[in-house]
Structures are given as C-alpha cells and as structure tokens.
Image 1: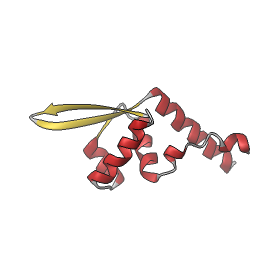
Image 2: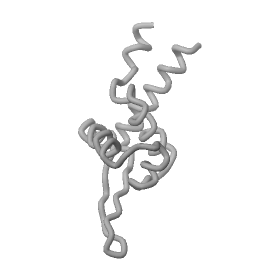
Image 3: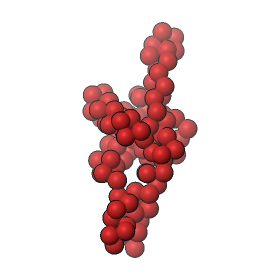
Image 4: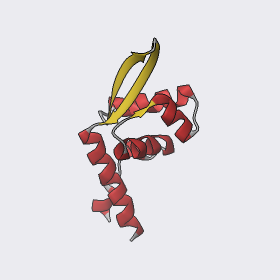
Length: 96
C-alpha cells in the first residue's frame, strides 16, 4: 500500500489540474479557450493552474499570433505525461 501511495502526485490532486493533464495527455495540444470551456473555469483560475503545472515542468506553452490575436497552445511534457500516468495507475491500484 505504501508503494502505491508514494506514486500519487500532489500536483494532480486538484480537479482542474487533473482535467488539464487529462486533456493534454490524450491530445497533441490544447489551446487556452478550449481548456477553459472544457473545464468550465475562469481565465484567472485556469491561468494559475497552468502556471503551477508549468513550474512543475509538466507542460510546455507555445504562444503565437493568429490574425493579430494571441493564440496559446499547451502541450504535456514527457515527464508530465509519465507523472500523470503513474498517478492514474496508483489510483487504479488503490481501487483494486
């Protein structure tokens, strides 16, 4: 049991961060507005959770302009995807 619990990652205990990583792991990338609509959160709330995941090196950000409007895309890093899969696997083990 202790072995399983050590694989739980505090970064994913929050439902918003769990949702962000869920979306990024199954997609090549997701833009800010899509994440916002998918998770039903405000700009500021989403931005703070994205910043947290970026500081953990779990996501990368690419900013560009499309038709003179900012367009921000988010990608999961290999380390972020690995940590997320370990976390999900640990939850599955706990439920067995």
